[in-house]
Image (tube, rainbow, N blue to C red; front, side):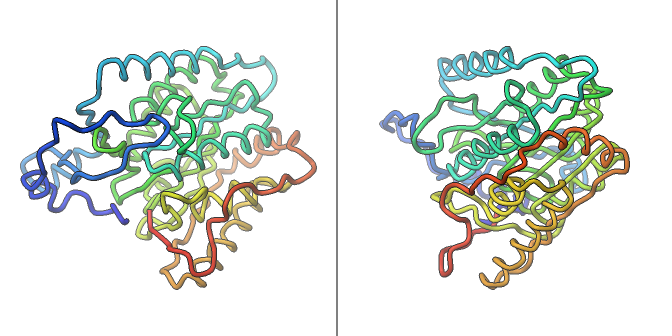
Length: 335
């Protein structure tokens, strides 16, 4: 489902929203909640321009969440943040943060395995944090949300040395031309805008970063986040959808091509991006969908410190895991 255009018709959707049943059974925490209700209107302002600009503040809505659940999630996040190891003075350490911003389990599976791949590639054991809900079998991590991501970035800024350490951020979700979509069942909604992410990284003092954003329209982040010390890879151009987000999948097209295949190889990041781009293009051609056009922008300074953090990556490729994102004749969904 393409959730790219979420502003138009939001008010009408709110008026048409059905009443919540008073006899809804308690959800099974091992199985993430589905999306059944219309997306609420999160914009503010009097004119269309003002309402669109309001999304730069990254509005986030939580509703109907039990206090016990809120307390449990806060404890999980605090515990996970406290477990991160400190940086080593004089050594460029990589800190890996992977985030699933949607409750569809494909995103949780992708974020969890991406943490394993990126941690091994960049020697980030003990310095890796995953924010993801249930993948259908387990619910043992802090859930991804805009606020959880921003809290994590603020904390990482206190742990990392902004002059030598590197943040490796991987996000996976749906997206729009406004930014990344946060959507947890029928209780969590939001948009993470490029400007808000840029501000959060700046406020945390995180200068060196590898940003890998998997979502439709994720190319909107490139002009805002690009800098000499930033390597940014996105699943799609700013005007294109990306594919493979069927809930029962283990991977999206971009996640499978880049994380599950290319970044398991002992090759530099730019070469891995080219490998992934070729694979995605082939799968999309065979699926007969409009090309997503993944974007790559690696700053000049980043090319230097990437050599440092990739010097210790495994010399032997690891095998892909899970169900492949592209299977001939299978359903293809845009993100």
